[in-house]
Picture 1 (cartoon, helix red, strand yellow):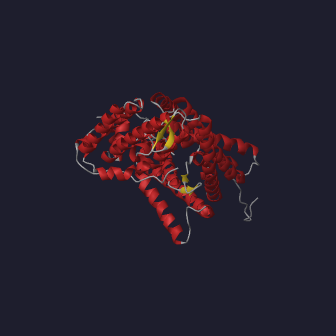
Picture 2 (cartoon, one colour):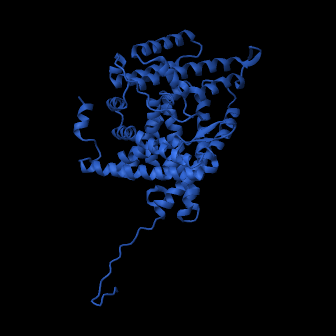
Picture 3 (cartoon, chains in turn red, orange):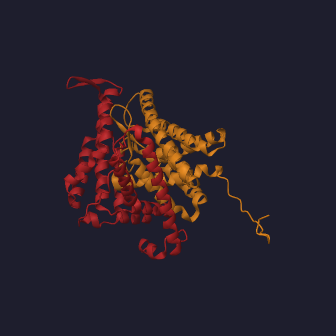
Length: 230
Length: 233
């Protein structure tokens, strides 16, 4: 369900939120969202408070509100789901604008929308104020497994290379009359994905050889980890 | 597709988070055996490939679209443990850098798409490969069926989680029917693309497909002695 995934969201600015330590921001986001998710749906005042917290954080971060709003489209498929809930949920019915809907379903839909929207906005704010490299650093300081952080590092580093390679392939396909969405053209599309895999894999082999040549033995060299353990 | 914050209550989210942590730590151990010190760069590039593959949309029904999840595909291409790591990293990056999938739902998403999606896809694939003729041509259809099964099973697992910690009072049997029915459709797209992609790679570089390695005969080293007359004996 849903559209393709957007591009990286970092918004360059100088603000206390941009300067904050990445692992503090990560912990803050996770703690804040856990509190939000644990709040009962009918504590409307609490949600107003959470919204205020997020809005203050947005104001402090100097990330334009429009920048964040535009990127909230990622929420759309699940908003549609939440809107459906009052019509399919169980429990006593109430009339809203002449339509009979489930009362607990209405509350549940509100809860999903409120929590989901707060989550998307807070996560967007983290992504907008934190460079991917700093985020990796934050994860490392939170004692995330070294291998996971390394894999993430490679993914973040080669994301643009590989997605650009894919978009060049799709452009080439389109210019030859292929419609990548049509099942008729799936075999062609699959061959492109196949060659994308082969190219990615071979790129990985070359990267590994280049790293081995520079002294890599399964851990990043000390020069890089020195920054992570000050 | 990615579960957002607030769909499941806090205890369920924390519990799936614990399951995800255990699953990832097992996969970390297993992936070393699949790739050794190449793990980080190789898994990183495979994860990037999975991410790029997920940008591919296909129409499902009624004007809506689905996108590739890639669990079974990654398992057949890179091995199940590496695939769990790749899918988990993709989900972490999507959640933290793209706000796609809630932070508190990260454990749920990793459990559903990483552990269950990859695990079911791989087990079905292995089961079929054991039954089908022992030829490399069996690999793409087995991968396709693995992908077909993995998607609705992950959806059913989501409904199960929803029945334990869901935040909405809905009739579970109806949700189950709707979710599984819908995801069978997505699974068909997933199966077609997985089978075709694996097929195209198997025909060019079968040595890169983890699930096909057992079918590639290792070339034997031949040692021939050359006689004075020039011919070989």
